[in-house]
Amino acid sequence: MCGYLLLLCQLCVYQTSARARPTEPANPQVYRNQASGFCYTILYGWVDRTNEMGEGPEGADGGKPHSRVLLAVFERPPQAQSSELNSAVIIASEPVTAYQGLKTAADYFGPLAEVTSAHGLNMQGEPYDVVISNRHLARGDFSKQVAKTTIYQSTLVLLDKGSVLSFTFIAENPERVSNLIENLQFGACRKS
Figure 1 (cartoon, rainbow, N blue to C red):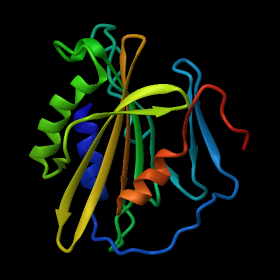
Figure 2: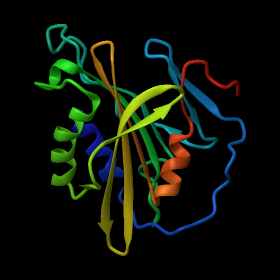
Figure 3: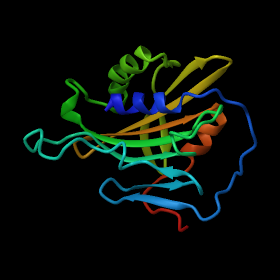
Figure 4: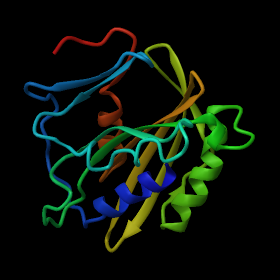
């Protein structure tokens, strides 16, 4: 699954320039995951590429649990030509058994940091605890210098029912990443 996150980064690496964005979405869509009890409000106009980034062939692994992309949304189509970073949100699920010795959500950042650093993203410090809607998640922040700009990625991780849930947010600055994270909710979701 770390490969999915890196693929996302490769699709999103464009030079960025700061620009004003609306703070409130008009007519947002909401992705709901009842099994894990969370929802994500997708900003108006964002492009859903979940199916294109989806899981591998069914049954190829003998019925064992496998990694799945639950949500993959981009600010604009990944193939669109632009000189700006294509902000993105990726939510994925992997079996805990895919990672030997994984006991806490923070442990996931060991393998994730290895994969991301191989692609130029450096982890900024150690993972730390964040609380969203009374749920504790581990958060790791990454950055990568590209030409004259910096790409920012934050990944939130939760262990839930034998799965690792990873919530990855990519944007052109830390404030924009924080704005994207604010659309994640656990428990009862806001009405849209």
